[in-house]
Length: 100
Image (cartoon, rainbow, N blue to C red):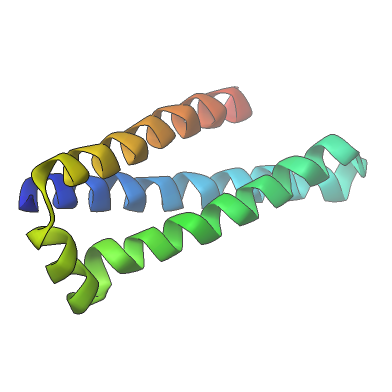
């Protein structure tokens, strides 16, 4: 499952970068316009960023969890990678629309 775990970790790292960029844009928009929509998007980014930082910690930085995940069934690794890649796709669309 090493390849799948590596792919999930890489997707999670990109998710963190995109979420930091989105949080910067949405936070700036909230400070400028004081709209509930920008505030909600900022809070969404904070919560999703916390989830992705925790996932990155488990996939890459914590050796015990990484060993446990590497010894799990390959289908579990594919499923975890698939969820992270779907999330990456969604964040790419949001980032594209935010920078447009």
